[in-house]
Length: 487
Image (cartoon, rainbow, N blue to C red; front, side, top):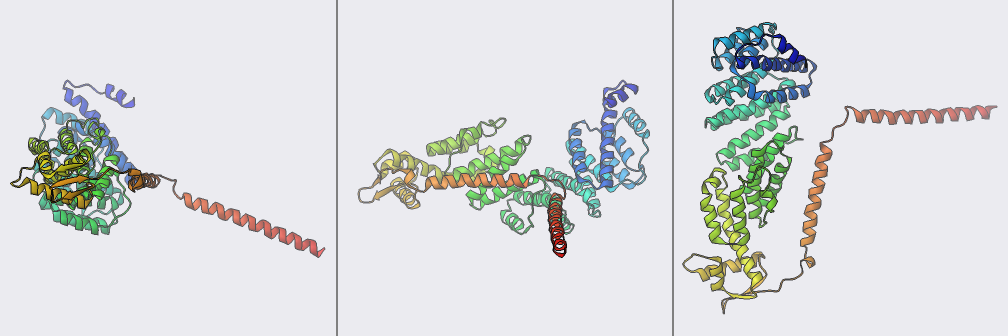
């Protein structure tokens, strides 16, 4: 309410753009004061809150507002001030006069804090990326990273992690992601030496993204396996790590681990991160199909994901039916979508699963069927379909996909009677996986609990106090008994 009153007392200019600028500028000044207080108090949580407030104002940022804020936060005429102003586009004179007038009411800091300087870099970089000025964003991000290398303060770690992300994003948008790989490795080494765990998390994910962008899965796995691991500090970075780990495991044919990582990343991701959750579900659907599972229909009916997951829904339907022709038509129809998602090579692997699913349906439906009919129902388009059907049936029997025998003399596949599944170990495996999932969720919930500082020390001191009082009472009682004996 106080902000509204102050705005009414100011003379309202005729231009609607300038009328909103002082309000946004005032919010930025409040964020700057919050960063200053957190820097003096060495309170990192206030820095996180300042970044969250900045993301709310992101769409309201304009060049005139940023220039006014730079005049307020930095020393006019300094090297940093001149460099950041050079990245901003020129605005008309009327807007600039209003901004300088409002910023003149506040005395600029003579010696700005390093946290405030890095925040100005971050603010300008976000504005340049939103305005699609990628060349200026690359220059600004490179200058900010060069400045960060000379700063070793724990209150800058949160701001630095955001700068690392936008630094990589600005080079990715221009197609020059390979240029900064060596610099990212150097920054990760610096963050490790400075015990900046949040920076290590962010830079590890950026390096994994860099390697996976160029399909360097072996190098990504080597880096991931040798990088130090610790308790996650950021839920967003942990979700990204799980997603990249799931992609690496999928390429390495470790589908079970990949499925766990991808599903966990999709569950832990915030609801607002719709694009990230869509990518996780796309890869999770492919991995589950490669494992021989059929995803539930509710996976494709999630809010906001129906259109994006439509190609994968039709692909799942083709695999479920076991129709090889339908599978080929779906793969050709959505080939551009699968190529853009980088899942085309995985879909090629699904052809064997489609054949196996169709063969399983045939074995359930027929107690005895000729190999020629099997080849016809599977729609094998090879020069010798009967021989291919015989080899496919033999391999499926050997792998345990179907319970049948092969009569080579007569050219028949003889299916055995289906037994009771509860006499096997399948129910035990199903319950074991559910129990393991519940236990992992419980452990994650316990790790996420927050306790008052030094609560364990206070508990120990209380126990020691009780022991001391008990010892004093026993000693007093013993002395009193000795006194009685003397009398």
